[in-house]
Amino acid sequence: MNTKIIKIDPVHIDQEEIEAAGKILINGGLVAFPTETVYGLGGDALNAEASKKIYEAKGRPSDNPLIVHISSVDRMTEIVKEVPPQAYLLAEKFWPGPMTLILHKNDRIPYETTGGMDTVAIRLPSDPIARALIDASSGFIAAPSANTSGRPSPTRAEHVIEDLNGRIDEIIDGGAVGIGLESTIIDLTEEVPTILRPGYVTLEMLQEVLDEVRVDPGLIAADSKRKPKAPGMKYRHYAPKAELLLVEGDNTKVVDKINRLCELAVREGKSVGILATEETKGYPKGEVLCIGSRKDEDSIGRHLFGILREFDRMQVDVIYSESFSDARFGQAIMNRLLKAAGHHVLEV
Ligand code: AMP
Ligand code: MG
Image 1 (tube, helix red, strand yellow):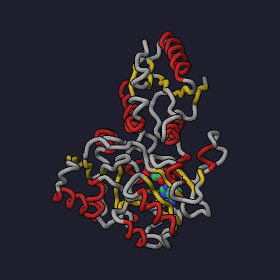
Image 2 (cartoon, protein in one colour; image 1 turned 90 degrees about the horizontal axis):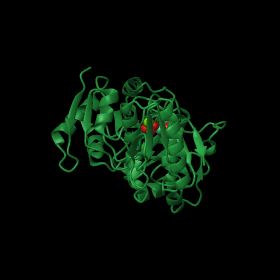
Image 3 (cartoon, protein in one colour; image 1 turned 180 degrees about the vertical axis):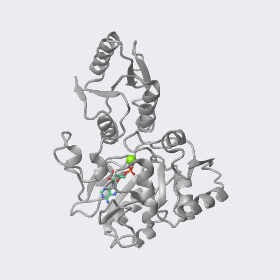
Image 4 (cartoon, helix red, strand yellow; image 1 turned 180 degrees about the horizontal axis):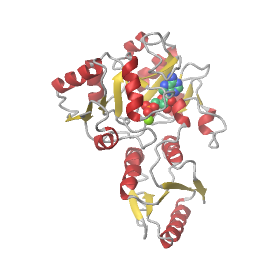
């Protein structure tokens, strides 16, 4: 398949191009597009065949449900059984934005879109290109991250091209995304609203709106004897090709430990990648990539997936990474890093 790649300026949106992309979706085709979290691989959420194509293009296990993107809160009612009051409270506070709600689906959403589940994940993104594309489509775009299953999520169009060129109809290049980590997922079908995936919207932010909210126990259990409730969270994910080791603890000790590990690995003839920060990037050995300053947490989230892909390109044998538990949305960053590392952590 020949994939059309087009550039769209988010500030001056080319409406004709958007309408054409909307037609592709209405006709059952696939279009990758930017959102504020990561790039999404879109298909018509109401069309079972389109959803099947998404799984095929990504190589995604078919029990891993897709998120349905809408562009106005009212349209939520068209695809769910009922909207609980908490959904409106959360929507008012965090939509448009990086938050996904799980509700009971109705018959308009095919099981192919929800991976066989009776619930559906819904998000209203803030990215202007995403919003325009949703408006030019059926109004319901099923879109998981636009990467090959298992690889780091795409935060620039180049990442999407790397993974999906030749496998989908169109890729819209809208530049680098703003947040860089996937949305916070909140399940509203449980008695107590439950965070199924941490993201830019944190537990503390949700507690300001909801009387009660908890974190899925399966998320916290690092040994994963308990399965996380979001099916996607059980798969190995975000993984660079090289072995990744997370070093956690007091900053100076972490730097010392990474230096020592690096020295040993280099002596064994390995090429070493180091995931460092603006504050620590002076490591004497290894291929050092700087994720951003610890004083600018947003930059850490924004650069994480791109850096994991960069290490792939450099073909390093092993990666040592600093940890980021203390960031405001450190839980979200560490959740991605822990999965990328296969929970391979060294405490110092
Ligand atoms: P992605 O868009 O690639 O980040 O993947 C979507 C994520 O949403 C996956 O981790 C899914 O498991 C999760 N998800 C989507 N729909 C549901 C649902 N109905 N119940 C629980 N988790 C869901
Ligand atoms: Mg994904």
